[in-house]
Amino acid sequence: MKCKIIGAGLAGCEAAYQLAKRGVQVLLYDAKPAHFSPAHSSKYFAELVCSNSLKSNDLTTASGLLKEELRLMDSLLIKTADKCKVGAGGALAVDREQFSKNISDIILQNPNIKFVSEIVSDFDDTPTIIACGPLILEPLASSFKQKLGNFLAFYDAAAPIVSYESIDMNHTFIQNRYDKGGIDGDYINCPLNKEEYNSFIHELSQAKVATKKEFEKGDVFEGCMPLEIMAARGGESLRFGPFKPVGLRNKDGSRPYAVLQLRKENALGNMYNLVGCQTNLTFGEQKRVFGIIPALKNVEFLRYGVMHKNAFIDAPKVLDAGFSLKAYPNIFVAGQLSGVEGYVESIMSGLIASINMYHKLLNGYTKNQFILPNITMAGALSNYITLPNKNFQPMNANFGLFPHIDIKDKIKRKQAFSDRALEGIKKML
Image (cartoon, rainbow, N blue to C red; front, side):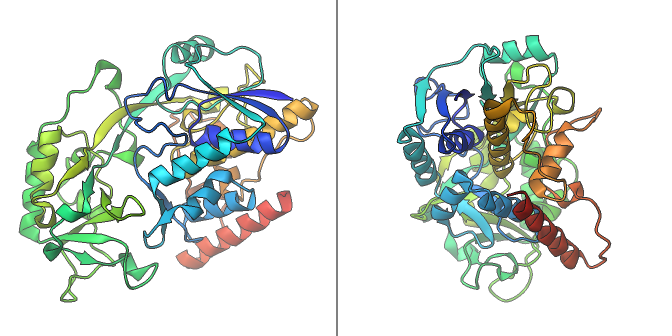
């Protein structure tokens, strides 16, 4: 049995691993290292572009539940992320380079996977998983448009990364929100008083944004909102978003007015990510505006925030629940191109698509299609992106996708969602 996979990102690598371990001969294509998209810089596979966090591990969160489901299904990428984690409280954050290098080594050393560095221009009826990511390159993007006619796009942004040694620790405190993950704390918190916060908001609203290329002009996805757009919705919007002070305390025990959190970017701890600060400000303006925050007055930027185009298909119109194209049953689409949004969600789509591809190669896809029930997070998300939806937008994992459970207590209801989902996964397996 043979299969092509286009794209060695999160979804593509997960799919390649799942198929290879089932004995399928996989031809894995990726433009790297010969060619890089505007948002990619690492030579390794499964590059994490926007953040090094795979979100919460807590089973009372949708992201924590989805990761646990993937662990039960032997996800290579979640297994590797667990091995490459860095301190991030209750979240699963990784050393990006170590994570991607480990994935690359596993993929390249697998005898059932052959890697080809090449830009793919088209697809035919050959069994293929297209997982080239939201930054799909030409001419494959044009081929999609011609064949599907429902090809959409949105934009997201990456947050800046700064050097640890340049942070003014006299204006910080160390704590995880609500002390999750231990009292020692993994986050560097940069508090602002009311005057400092208002000054930051004012300067942010006046700052110059980078000129977007013509192909980048369009809607911004809510799940990765640039800081300046969020702030434009109202002065208090950041205090209810990435700068929220709840669950945190100043050194004197008081609650700060607002807080910017910094999360460890690598295992060495010499690089920190500005949590939730995706932005399209010019590089000079990023340095000036973030410098208003006392702890970042003289900070050294190791990577400035950037904004780029993300593309996705109109999944409800063109995709079935197993991630294959309705008009081209031998072609599967996985990753953010399929309409899921987020790292873990992309991994999930690659895993589900690969198992369905395996069943298709094995018996024509007629008997053993792998469709998870909608009481599981993976099943509910797959169900959402493929059901009729006139105003479809990419979707993260969230408990709102689940069938209702009549429990009033919020935490107990979420726990019940998780218990039911994990039991459902175990029955399927």
